[in-house]
Length: 389
Image (tube, rainbow, N blue to C red; front, side, top):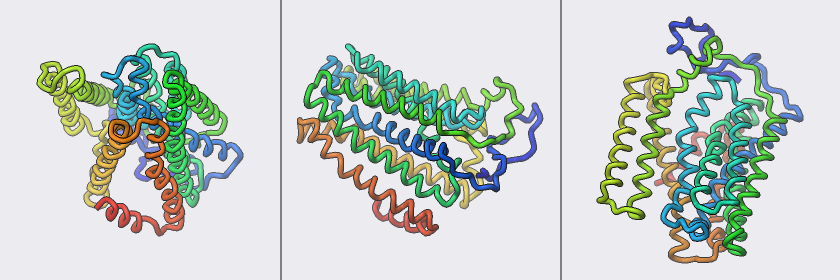
């Protein structure tokens, strides 16, 4: 359980900006032992991934019903977008902070509790703004998704990691199958209370996840080159300027896209001004990450090392970015298009989405088995490129 590239020397105070973020685990050469709490922690990670996708997949299916019930059809797209925006912004900060402050368990439990509160706020909403605010809080729990994949690799022997990671994906696929069917069935039965009951179910899932992580997850002892720094010095390693620029730019950009064609025309000064300012801020974020810092959200060390490291990593990030665009387009817009063109019954609408997630869930286990045996890397690359082509 050793992250390569970590430096053993602790930097002086004047060298803190050059210090490594890499973690060194005590007894790194020893394989983790399996205990009863290990199984609880793994179950917690399965439940976390299931709950995160459950929260993401449910509301878009009945978005029109939520907008109609709360008289907020013009801004109903912010219900799923609020969660995704928080996740996109906070993911880098949460992942970085969990290492800088050695607070992985605290962050996992804390973000789940915020989502628990958000899910408890939504059911009593009388205005769609309250549901959007609830989704923002739920987004904190969804933003911890990188840690849901880190923890199994941290507490399990190497040979079990690929298969357990596939199990984490399977749990997510189960959540993606269950959420649309549950919220669709409940809302079809009662358009006013059905989707509210879904949030109560979601609240219970977040609470159970937080409790399971609290009881089962015991992070291995580890240290890094930042351990000697003060709290204020560690804060500087979180790239707060980059976080501010990314938050501002993405928010303005998405606000302009949601205003256009709904509340205002594309030619409206409000839409154009918001759009242009958002793009300028995002461009400033890119320039700052390239010229202003080398250890920010887009850590430059990740892109160095030639073809074997930097270029490969950059291509993988680009492919994942494209995959994310395709996935979220399907999640948000497929239910809306299906409702408008083919199906008004929310349960049947949810049933139309099931083949995609069933295929995802069934395919992930063979991948885990192949990677566990060491023969899946080349096959995965060929299959992925072939299907994409």
